[in-house]
Image 1 (tube, rainbow, N blue to C red):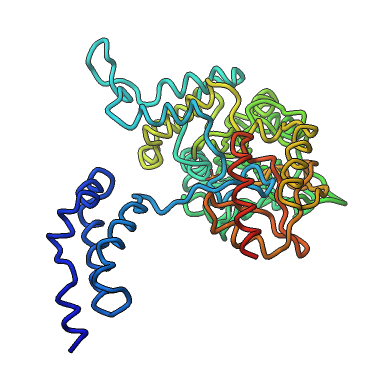
Image 2: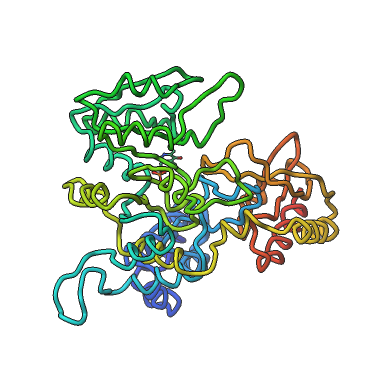
Length: 434
Ligand SMILES: *Cc1c(COP(=O)(O)O)cnc(C)c1O
């Protein structure tokens, strides 16, 4: 009886909607979000979880915290530069700016001079060609997998793709390149063995049914020991001899050699060595948005651009803008983190350790994102109790540390220096709760 009485005191929906804080929330969240916050607070009052008097405060507090995205920004304290679970490459400030400008109406496919339709992504194409002069033509598509699918579909649908058995890789989360290529209607003509493939293996496989030769950079693992592969230069001679295009899937997206990663192939060298086309990801070592980069001979790239499938894998205007800005602007965070000054990293790490009472240990970061496997990025980390990891992840800001060997490790390589004080607060809060 008493409960029924109190239910009568649950604020009515129109009363709650009239609250200034609720009305004000309309500028940030949709009406249906506001209604569901109100209904859930009323439900909880009916169920006796909160008192009718608390409903108003609960609605106001939940709406104040309501956001339109469930994606939470995370400080990456893992030391893994291209962290797939954290969205790979963080964009550079100029790329973020370009992305915001592109969010409105933009002349992505319009010539403002004549007022007629123009070529989509022309600025991005020009930026790619400027960044990689070894290429005659450039095309950007949705992601690296799309670039590869477009290449094999255009060059080898219904025909054979000659590929080494040592390069039939899985790129993550169960996605296998051989399956991806087979899904385009091309047949895989596997040559060699897992550890050794020779030029004569390729030569023996090439015939009238060959659509292209494909070389894939096995970016996320290394075969060591009794191994041999065939270089791009050797393959390009073979491909020229038989008039068969050579496609090289680089994966990670370095446009030029990087001394920090001596074994990571780059677009300029691969094209100079004679590849007809390279494919790569925009959000790995290139440090840009998700994108598939295609660079190479004009005839081959243009035939890909004209294929009907190109329309299904085209890039959106936001990513086009962000990619162009990444290529034309100062070096992106990924490159900065890769080249972080070890002395400065140690200073910052020691300062954090001193402030929170942790110890400094040696720690190797990684390139990540399936790039440069086995290349350690020597640095250091703050060592904390293992139990600190969960409160750090759930804190504000959220911090993702590395959990290893019964400890929580905080590697500052991929934390912007401007965020050091946020990180310090987050670590203090997490440790206080232990
Ligand atoms: C990452 C990768 C891909 C896929 O690129 P996405 O941009 O993730 O679609 C393809 N090939 C190689 C060698 C890769 O490393």
